[in-house]
Image 1 (cartoon, one colour):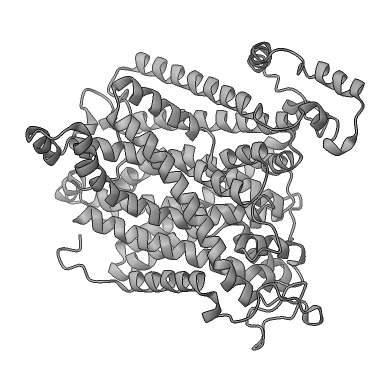
Image 2 (tube, helix red, strand yellow; image 1 turned 45 degrees about the horizontal axis):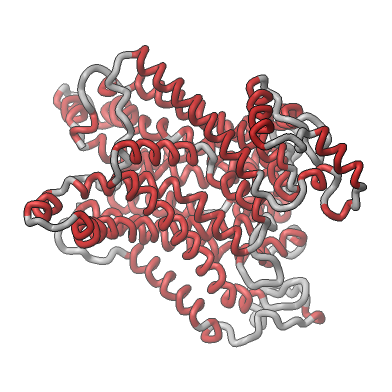
Amino acid sequence: MTAPLVVDGQPDVRARPWLPWLLARAGGVVFVLWAVATITFFAIRLIPGDPAEAILGGPGSQASAEALAQARADYGLDQPLGIQYLHYFGRLAVGDLGNSYSLHDSVVKVIGENLGGTLLLALFSLILAALIALGLAAWSVRAGRVAAGVGSVLEIVAAAVPHFWLAISLILLFSTVLGWLPPVSVPGPLGYVLPVVTLGVPLAGFLGQVMRDSILDATASPFVLAARARGENDGGVFWRHVLRHAAIPAIGLAGWAFGSLISGAVIVETIFARPGIGRSLLSAVELRDVPLVVGIVLVVALGYILMTTLTDLADRLVDPRRRGNTHRGRER
Amino acid sequence: MRGTAPHWRPVEVVSALVILLLIVAAVAPVLFAPGDPLAVHPSSAFSPPSFAHFFGTDESGRDIFTRIVHGTRASLVIGLSATAIGIGLALVLGLLAGLGPRWLDFGTTRFVEVLFAFPGLLLALLFIVIYGPGVVTSTIAVGLATAPGYARIIRSQVLVVKNAPYIEAAMVLGRSRTQRVVRHLLPNVAGSLFVLATLGIGQSIVWASSLSYLGLGAVPPTAEWGAMLSAGRTYITSFWWMTFFPGVFIVLSAAATTLLGRSLQQRVRSS
């Protein structure tokens, strides 16, 4: 009745006891990882042109036939596809992602050097986004109709701002006009300010929309009425009960938020000239450095899967209604 | 929420007006900007915004306002096509999952789950690394990247509608399966598809222009907003108007479609 667009119909594993639930989740994780790796493996076979040429510097490099054959042998490209597939998985199983065509270095090493910076950037942006979204939703939901409208429009506009434009505008304002902050990333906290704001504001817009909906939902639910009946005041009800409830869908979005932050990092790291896996991914795409693209995609997919599994776990721990025998899908 | 009398709120009026103006600009750009978007005037290169050039000029002296107005069509078409591709793919997946036998539902749902593990831009970048950059590939890439999200929503929508009383009634009346799907199920799913599409267009425009900005989509001197931004990237600190104004129009179109989509969504929900 109320929400026709609710995303539902996931197999409801939550109503089961712990051990089968964990096993089912672990099986799901392994399956998705295998499928992601397989799709990427076959997707890159669709690339036109000889990979050996890409290794030796692209079609313009005029590499000799012997050099091409040598490169093919080095990278195992002369084997049948099935053997290559098995090799690929054998190497994945021991954490070997091969060698980058363009950097002539191990992909694991390249990712290891760049991952930390991106994760730190994403973490700060997530914190900023959560604070903005929470503040805006908490203020505008309680401050009357006009404030609610203003808050809602602000969230939608924030969510509609492309990262690259926000980055450019912030650079213009804070570096070119005011001269307060560096236009490119420098080491230290100052270099983080603009990239974090660029990534955080659009995310805050999305999170805010979700939080507003669930705050409104929670305000109308029985446990809020019960709390009021016990004589708690408005502020107490809001901060203790409504917000806790409103946090649940936002936590559920953490996996999605992680993906969107990594997508954003491709752009933000490029504009602010920050080292990171986003920027490495873009240059790998431009240079058609297949092993590096695949490696980064796999690592990000792994991160996404871990995040969603962790948030499901947190969800199950936080929300008492997700445990026990009640089938939650029914009430909707 | 808002009861039975659907009155237009100011936000809805403003966003509808913005969308209308953008559509007019896409259909008949000369109404707003009679000049030639590709006309080069090297003598007036890099002019700041003025009455002669509202938004200034670029490195070849081309008028940026004219280019933005004439670029509306390309940007809207890219956004619309990407959304159509995304929803089209999602419709196939969602209908297979929602109407097919159990094993098909299981398989399709797992497939969509796997696609979800490639966060948006990554799926698009993977597609571009295979098929190379360009307007067509970047549009398909954006459609592909948005499809999993739509598929999930369409599937749950199909499941809701499939069990509705009127479908049961049609079955009792002896309508065939095809008739039930085409005459009763699809029209009822279409309502929420329209809302999804309105919400999606803004997002597609942002994504496609992001790809253009990164140099993987439309390329200069095409008068497309993302490509204009990309061209201005080199001059950002000295000639801000080259990047600032095309960006304003991307934000404007994305925000207007999203605002309208959200309020449509609320109307559908509350009715």
